[in-house]
Image (cartoon, rainbow, N blue to C red):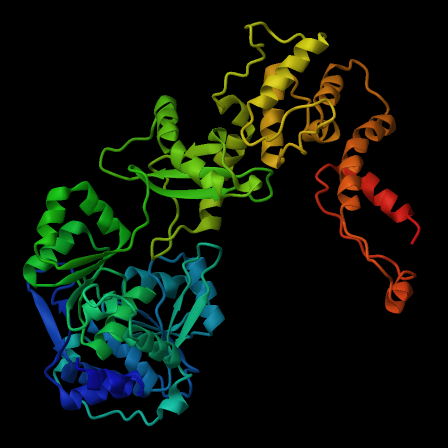
Length: 586
């Protein structure tokens, strides 16, 4: 499209733009779709802007007849059907009729569909003929049952010339009206509706058209796509797929091509589509990228038909298709690893899992460097998922976190319970000379603790009798690692984190472990709390004191203090701190 057309698009609503293009350039191609839904035997059907506007008008009259018009998108129509021109046309027709089209993912669960339709007060479901399985599922599960309409076929819509269905709203009057509704992936809970207004569309177009401060020869994706034939593998109920058919096609003359009317696009299907109709650019979903990466010959064959492939895929280790960090309400995070699914791929045995963990460990270590203590991953807390039970994903391919965690709840519990046994470190209760640690021998225990602490990565400074572990930089993760090594190496499963926090020096920890008789809690806490109070007291002394008190300062001295207590990991320590603070006068 020329600059004049693009300029006009920035100041008009999409239904007006389509009507204008139907008058000015009726034979200009809008997009291509397979004639048959399940194969490419009948080739592709090209829809021009004259035909698009005619279908939009026909569907707008059809909506008015069967549902009636409304104002400002008050009536919500859900649509489930194949990826063909009727989707774009019904979306624009809904806007003309004052309604709004909702595009639910056919991969949603029945509970998710119920939640979405209820949230939108959507009472009408439009489907193609025959009703797709996803449409049947909605009709059978959603209560109250939506009013069901069957959209006319493409041949029926193209067989007659429909009169213009006028859209009278000005740019200012209609810019905040809803254009369409999609929903979030559901990766953090139930999917939530996302309403795109016409203003949202205008901003997308304006952003794509703005001047780019880059080298002229480099160009940008938006500039490159203008006027190009674009193979779109994104599903039409996804924002990226809709952007191709609405915000790249209509303003900029990009010609979207849908490689499949139903089902999920495959690399073989993409190649078959390219052999039927030429394209210059392909916009690929991750699954197709994975297939092409695993079959170089197929990639070369596809590349012969394309100038550019836009990859929607994250960098990952070979053989790994997904990862999920878990550990909410636990002291430490764990990592779930999903393997790439392929024909004949079997679940790994214990040895193979250990080998895979070693291969991916450098990537985990790199991530650990930038993560807070509670979010760092240990080898013992990496779980390789069975290939027959992959992560649960939303329609756009993102992981649905709550559903996936619920699916592996038992395995995650077992992972945490068995973390000590899985750890591959050789701290099995042997001293450096190969002898077992004698718990009755204080020096033997001291050496073992000293060597174990020294093996922890991240500690700073040198060890002294009065220096606490935490003064040397020990965090909660290091404390947990130390606890596991002590439990296993000393055969003392009764040890807890409080033992380390309450005895933060080498000598104190040695005494706590070797003591055969329990001291009274008050005496023990009194001894163990002093190093912490000493540390905090020294830090408090470093706070600058005011040089002179103002009248306002003197008046405020009689007011009660508000103190925020943080870092109280150990319950007994926290209770003692609170008690001392509350007993403090003023």
